[in-house]
Image (cartoon, rainbow, N blue to C red; front, side, top):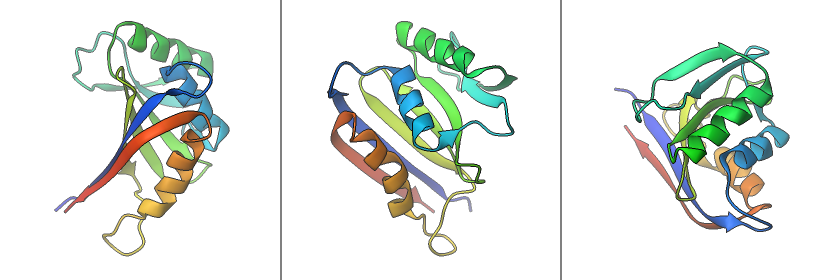
Length: 145
């Protein structure tokens, strides 16, 4: 049976401005999260009607930022796959208009034991990065077996 693990993070705007998808992406890029295989990005494209059809494309970072901006302007869920610091550990990051972020630990999930997700590792790599720029109202970690 597959194990699913995720974290929902609820923000209360930015400490020095407003919540934007591209600002979250840039912040995570600055703290070690990036694309995989040199220039390959996986994102949710605009006007996908929340079908969550992840699309791979080889473009520059500015194209990703533009896609995220369009998704937010359309009031759609933004999404991008990110890998941590040249490791094999990755996430699917979903950005919601109402200052909510869902992080799905879907790529080589970091574990402490065979089936137990290392929630502390993700906390350090995500929550601590976000709290420097955003007020975090709450977060919730979930794992189902």
